[in-house]
Every structure is written in C-alpha cells, then in structure tokens.
Length: 132
Image 1: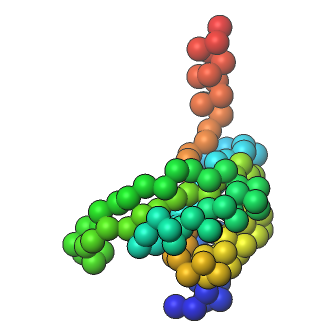
Image 2: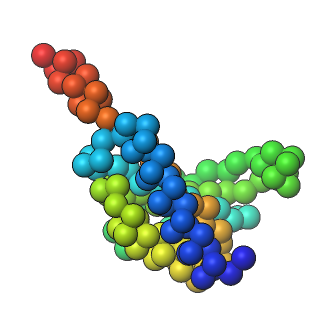
C-alpha cells in the first residue's frame, strides 16, 4: 500500500474510531491522549523519526521491542509512540496522522495507526470524589 493510500485509509479509520468512542459514551468535549504508533526492524531506523516527531511537538515515548505473533509473521520489531493531547476531532487527528505518515515514509519505517483511551464524565466525577 502506498503512503497516499495509507493516509486515505487512516482518515476512514479515524472516523470509525471516533464514532465507536462516542457511541460507547466517551465524552465528546474531553481532551484525549492520541498515541500514534510506529514500528521498524531496528532502533536505529526509528531514531531519526522519533527526533523529528519530537520537533513537531509530539511527546515521544521510549522505544520498545515486541515479539510478533506467528499469524503476524513472527519475529521482532521495535516500536514507539508519538503522543499529543487533542480534541476528538477528525480533522485535527487527520492532520496529525498525515504529518506522521509522511514522517514514516521519509524514514522508511511503518506508521501503525493511532489509538486513545475512553474518556467519560464519570472519570471526572470519580476523581472529584477521590479528592474530597
């Protein structure tokens, strides 16, 4: 798949993820921790992309090694996440993803999509109760 095709596919997935989160009751106006996932065969391949993601304003989490399941081809990959707080807004996330997909292309590594965590008003209420 070309990187241009990946950008278009990611736009579709972004809308599906947002719709699923909202359908499950996630807070539409909350700020979300958006984690963009990258992988490569070696730490050295990731290094330049991690530095550049940081310069783009993302928090870069420490790279780690993962073993792939046999159905995913087996072997090992190294990966890191580029993280940014963001509204659950498709256009904002599309913009982040497009920048990072182009970054992956430049460094010849894989962009593996993004994820976030469920946010609800109940979480805020629980935090307030804990503080009292």
